Image (cartoon, rainbow, N blue to C red; front, side, top):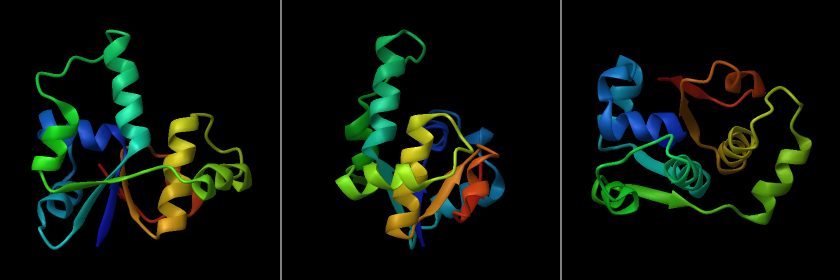
Length: 125
């Protein structure tokens, strides 16, 4: 399975794993699954760090690479797909991650209860 971890799932995996649901933890721990991090999640974390809303005691990108994560860049197709999504969720980061999951055929790992309303396969954290 190819898993796209949204920002909260990524951060919980790295430093607050007990917050993950059993299903999410099992999927993340399964080495047969691909762990994919959107560059959108890296950007969202960077913004929170720069605003003082998030403190990390590790280098985010290097740590993710060390945990076998791959990165998914935002393509023009991903960005444009946001325009086709119904206005269910207002957060532009989440809307872009949903578009990426849809286009790339990824299973989204997220605690956001609204995102499954887009019809994207989701594992709740």
